[in-house]
Image (cartoon, rainbow, N blue to C red; front, side, top):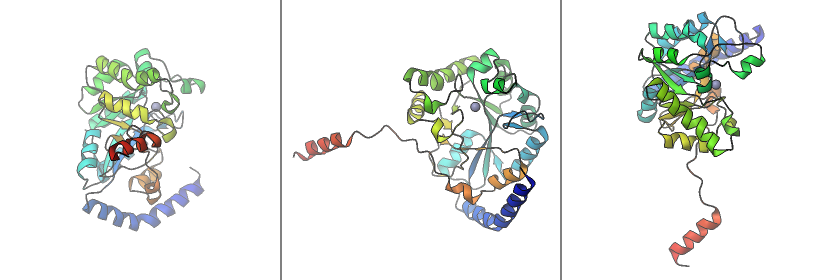
Length: 295
Ligand SMILES: [Zn+2]
């Protein structure tokens, strides 16, 4: 971030702080405190791409979370969304499955007894194949192995989740069998490889355009307990607990604090509403009503 932007954000953050403190106090009293689900990718000091966060910054962010939030599992997050939340809650998640996370991020979480959900892309963790977007940039980052995932899952703190087979843009998948394979079959295979249930699914890219209602329906029918998007919104009690909205954990501490203390601007982000199966066409409805009314 440029120094000018940093200064503008600092002014905004400190200027809106009294309002936020008041807003958070009222939300907590009404058991409507936010449930904030963060997503990370790769924790390493080389800053090789925009989704790499340095180790010391990750550690600072975890310290900040422990101090200001209840750090909970996705299941506890869903429980609070269903029943009320008296204190800001945060969930730590990761996407893709970068092998470097074995070195610092995952041991750090375990050392501090912080739960996290770790979403992996099956083809890459099974075959050790780096991601095409990294290869294009000349990076051959090693994915986690199934043995790594079993090891971390065995700590009881790191839950493994599904992140498709090949990391496609799910919003652009039109073939039904492909959709089923990416959303459901990849998760079932991951489950078998781990010998543990895979309860959550995260959409690659995670913006509204990268999702589709049919994928939500498949995930729901397949028995996933929740699915995660990634377009930067908070969750509140009363929201649909099946669809968990996530926030990118920015590698700038000020921006991170700004978002996690409830930035009023972020409250305006429209929720992607997963709609249950579409209503029959209008004509059919009218026909139906006529039959009922006998006209
Ligand atoms: Zn991803």
